[in-house]
Amino acid sequence: MKAPTIAAWRGAKEPEAPTDIAAAALRSDRFRLEREGDWKRLDMIVTRMEKGRLRSISDENLLELPTLYRTAASSLSVARETSLDVATLTYLEQLVQRAWFQVYGPRQGFFAWLRSFLFGGWSRAIRAIWLDICIATFVMVAGTIVGWLLCAQDSEWFYRLVPTSLADTRGPGASREQLLETLQTESSSAGLSTFAAQLFSNNAGVSILAFALGFAFGIPSLMLLVHNAAMLGAFLWLFSSQDLTLEIAAWLSVHGTTELTAIMLSGAAGLHIGRSMGFPGNRSILKAMSESGKRAATVMVGVVIMMIIAALLEAFPRQLVEGEFNRLLIGGAMLLFWIAYFFAYRPAHDEAAA
Image (cartoon, rainbow, N blue to C red; front, side, top):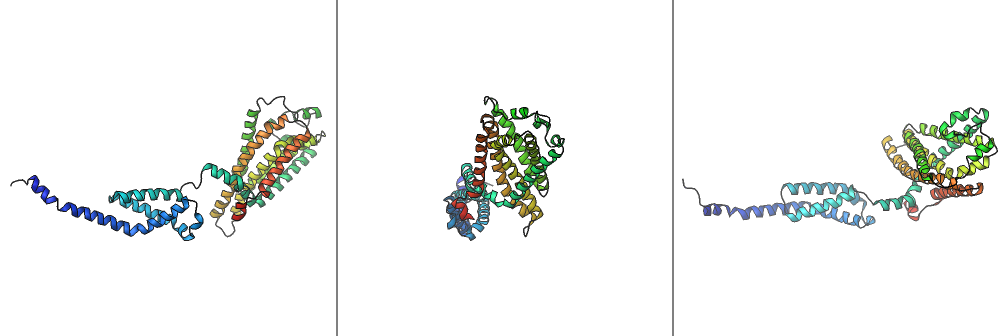
């Protein structure tokens, strides 16, 4: 049998080519027409979100955004498998990529987040846990009083409450001159940066531990606050017994108003999570933990910032500034600043959100 010639082969195939192209174009047009309405709707929502025009988007469209995104992603997958026209593929790829950033991507950059955190977000989270802050403050004040009274009754309690590494030469047997010497300024700032780093590491560890222990219904967090406050009470008793109450108060106030406030906030954040677990109200425990966890995490980011500031204050101004009045001025100014920032400072957009 004679093999077909090239011309005969071409003649057999050429009539089918226009038919195949027409069929592919028909499939592409039909595919686009069936789904184009959802694509345009998704495109409209994403475009308005990219331009920051969220108020012009209805609640219905916002709720349907994830569904429309998944529909477009599914359409893109089908378009790739069936080799639809290049224009459709390009449009869908760009649309799905833009929609992904709006659905799953970060809502704002780092500097935008930092600005919103410092100018409203942090203070709003602090005010949201006000009850836990009141409880933590009461516990710390009570712990300080208990530590003072225990040492006043029996000086051996000082060694039980204060670690040897912190006590150093400061103990019940120390003279007034020895205690006063520990409150004097340094001759220079050399090496204080290393001291600041050590203080930050120690203080941040205490704060994080107080926060992390909150999962056990906040009880360990409160116990840790009591222990640290009792240690403070022991130091106050020691210096007060040598008529150095004003001196120790001024010395501690430089960094203590910031550091103790940060420790109190970390304990309150842990208590907030524990309290939401024990008393979720009408919410499920998981939902209550999720909501309280977000607020507590925001508080803890600020606590780290406060610990950095406290370490710098403890390593430099406290060691270099002389005079009780000057030290009390620094400590008092920092305390007033934190109170005003947390409870008095309320930006206009913060009030509108409330």
